[in-house]
Image (cartoon, rainbow, N blue to C red; front, top):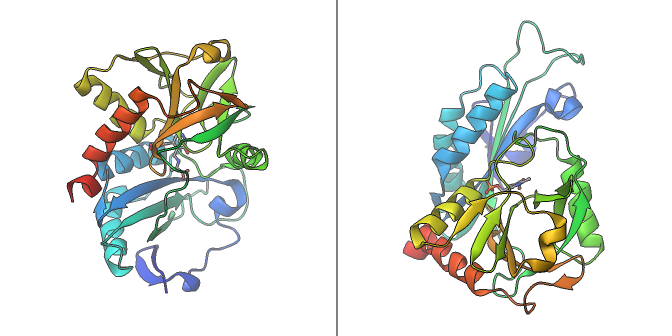
Length: 282
Ligand code: PDD
């Protein structure tokens, strides 16, 4: 039986009742986070909570105690016996429940706060890498907010799956931005490059960690757009994210990168990333 957190209480998951008038259900009016736990230790917790705080602020959702969700996450890990091995914590805050109207409830209603922890099995083999496809980015212009409105991401990922690939890479105005649920890096010779942080990508926490690893290891890295016409010159590519860690990309739209195997820069960053996680220390 999974124990979850719902509006201040810990309870069995099947006892949670969300109103059909919840604005998360009706409008996708909310934000979420996915946090990784290694051996019971929440990884980059503060950064995840800071991003959630900023999302709540951007959407002007009132009354959500984001800070409290750190302790809630740790408690869910304990209550669900996830202190050994890999797990993820999912956090979601919506604007709350009110009769359907596009304007915000006035006076404001309490937000709906939900959190769940579960065992996590990584997908894809980090030693072999994965295949990807490119897709037109049909998302809105505030991809920097981690909202629960993920339909374009779901459609894109489904399209990847249907074509035998594992991830879809969003392309907007000729720039390859990020994956449906991961950030994206390329290697051109010695230099690592990733799209700059702006309103068209999520400020990924793993992306920041990878850039920091590059800095400390002396690997040249640049935050600058990567254009589709440059892809044939890329020697390596990889995804970065809470659920994918550092995952080599070995195919894009059917063509192989480098020699079709994870390249040396990617493998080095995989090692450095693992060394940063509690799993490696534990
Ligand atoms: N997604 N870009 C997008 C669009 C994402 O949805 C995610 C994460 C990332 C990587 O961000 P981070 O390094 O902070 O996990 C980039 C989560 C894991 C998800 O939707 O399940």
